[in-house]
Length: 126
Picture 1 (cartoon, rainbow, N blue to C red):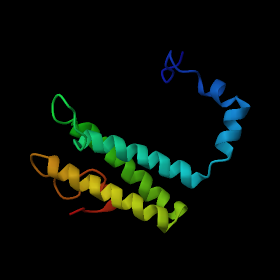
Picture 2: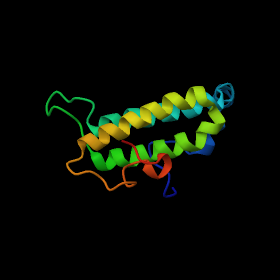
Picture 3: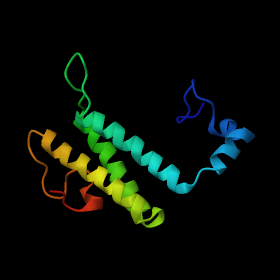
Picture 4: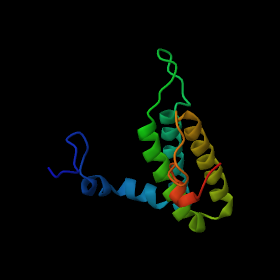
């Protein structure tokens, strides 16, 4: 087993060899795959920023994890925008900006200008 394999998950080569799975993924447009990945990153970041409530503690929050997710989302949105078109990119940018602002509100002390999550890709968010 390599460093990247997990005992509970089959090897990618084995999984990709299923003809039905290959046929299914071949029918999905790149725009759908990219936007789906962005939505997953947005959802995870929203939870980590603390926008989802936990019945016991009041909220889930892990700002270190949220920072990583927002950075990844900003990089993907920035890189993909020319490929997916303005219609799709606009809504992704709006979601990203909302997460960046929510992150800034959740911090006890503000990040230095240009150091907030995603700002190296998006510029200063205020």
